[in-house]
Image 1 (cartoon, rainbow, N blue to C red):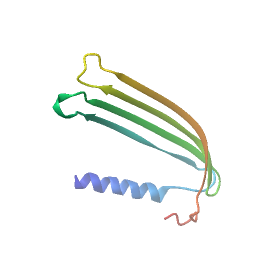
Image 2: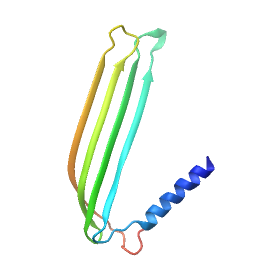
Image 3: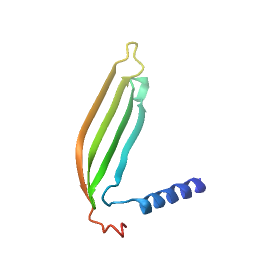
Image 4: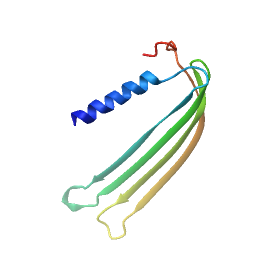
Length: 113
């Protein structure tokens, strides 16, 4: 466990130290989430299960030093299911999104942290 934590911390520090915020560099990143929850009420009554997946990648390009423009995508999948019922109810919501972003960094280009 300690080796995994040390490796993850080293990779993060290396990533930060190699990050470039100067003109003609690419900016790639994003976020992700997976969540699954099951709940049951007392006395064996109807419970529910919820599963959620969210992905949000983004990509940008530094047009000038410390100024990037790009595109952010989004995908969300949510499911709700009632348990312990003969005809369980299932609700499913899927959402897609897309949008531009502008980002400016106030850090000096030679000393980023």
